[in-house]
Length: 168
Image 1 (tube, helix red, strand yellow):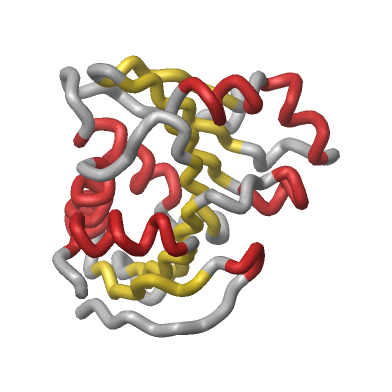
Image 2: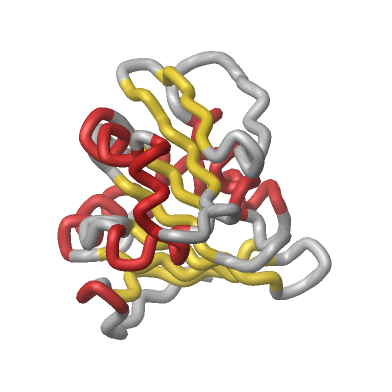
C-alpha cells in the first residue's frame, strides 16, 4: 500500500512514496516500474543495511530495461559493473569498501553521472559528493522476506514517479 508524505529530507529531497514489499517479487515489480522512467544522467542511490535488498532492486531494474536477461551480481569486489541496456548504459556501483569519498572519482563516477544511469549501493560513502538530483531509495528489512521502501527525491522526480506509479 503506497502513501505519499511530505517530509523534508537531506539535500532538500522530499519523501515521495513509501511502500511495503512482501518479497523479492514485489521488489522486482517496483523496480520494473521505476525502470520505465529512468533516463540518461539519472542517479539512483540505494541505501540500506546488509541484506536489505539493494542488489536485488538493482538486478530487477537493470533486467527491466531493454535487452536480454543478464546475471547482475553485487559489484562488492569490482566496485562497478556496467550494462548496455538499449540506448542506456547502466553503471552499478557498490561503495561498501570505499573509505574516502574522493575515491569514487577513481571509479569514473563523474563520467557515469553524465553518460548513463547510475545505481549506487552504499551512497552514504560518497558524503557530499552524492548529487542533489539523486533519487534515494531506502530499503529496510521488515520481516523474513519483507522489506520497507522509502523513496526520496526532488520535484523533478515527483512528476516522473507520478507517471510511473499513477499517483497524483
